[in-house]
Length: 97
Image 1 (tube, rainbow, N blue to C red):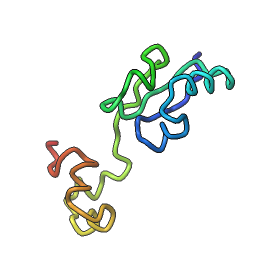
Image 2 (cartoon, rainbow, N blue to C red):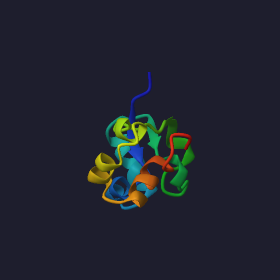
Image 3 (cartoon, rainbow, N blue to C red):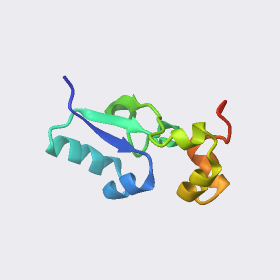
Image 4 (tube, rainbow, N blue to C red):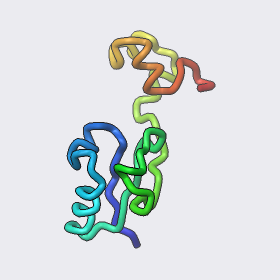
């Protein structure tokens, strides 16, 4: 069984390693971790997170999907503040998306 960490391509994760692949590799070795389960692979930069470290891809999911599915715009705006933010999070404004 592989020991993996979940690492995203979001800035708050990559800043921890100064956007430096050597720091990521060092962290994995120091903690005896086999590789990375990558989250948000769409914005993946192979120079920062080398392909050889990626052992799996974390599939996108929506833990707060119910208000979106029910088209409860008031609750969505309460959570996301703008329609642009809703669209960015879900990839669109319709169930089909």
